[in-house]
Length: 404
Image (tube, rainbow, N blue to C red; front, side):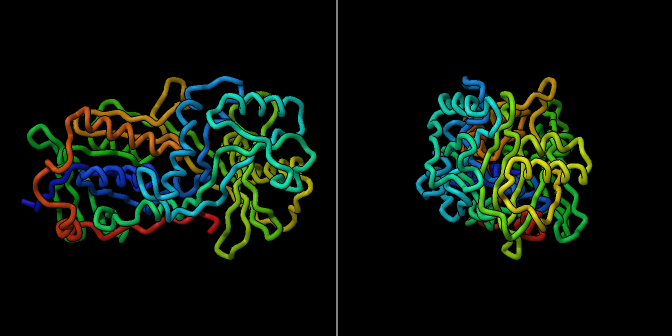
């Protein structure tokens, strides 16, 4: 018989949502291990633009939507954590910008759209002071300072993983042919992992899938009937060049779309060269284009919107990423973080980076509803990881954004 290990929670997925959950579970006293097959931060988390927003872009019709209600309080909640006084300590996380801005654009209707949105979002938006407005936007329509702010995702992931070295393990990142299977034992699932040093059986009171796009495969491995995943792809664009000014900006387009025409965040590559990371409608519509065509559209859009910004000698790249969400009728975008439970498995999706705290609330509530209290698992303790270290090859590395 292979050795066995018992714990309260086995958590799959080391992105921001999974790591946020790990912090909440550990603070509440649940014995938890987190398993990650790739790097911490994966693809979706590390390549998020890092905007912790309060829903203005969802309220452009002049009324709260489900999405704007769900996310309205997130900037304040995250700020408490970054100040070290919130539900988890994120004081080691770096801010890329204390504010994000919204530009109404030059076109007709842009100012009215920004006005309506600013009136209905909790916390509101303020007209930016002239000194705050970048020179390339001055005199070109309304610029609002939003309650949103921007985090450096790499430092966020490191801050979330801090202090959890004995709880986070990698699955096969050293090249070993590990296998992971779920088996039934007395009406409960057991996880069998075949690692470099032999097999290990793990029994948990709950298995928590928070692996983004990987949730579908995990659900199938566990034999679940109900949870299904949908993907909404993006084709993001980066532009790197020494002359690019630091910018954190939503650009509204024509009409009343809830998606900005363009969202720009600023970063630095490995050579400390400024990088603009471009999302919004550009990235959503770009999935229908080739990389070459998407870069052509991005260049044309920036030249049209921001003619005063020097665009010569920029290095352009595309990145295809998938946003993973619970399947919805007609592929509708979910308004809020979401979970689905089946027997001893909880499948969780944050939907958006900013909603990671809401997802953690939902999971903690579900555990309490199911009568899962900390510390009743029996068996080995997470503080004595000898069995785990004999199977898992160590802690996963930290993901880095593709421009670095």
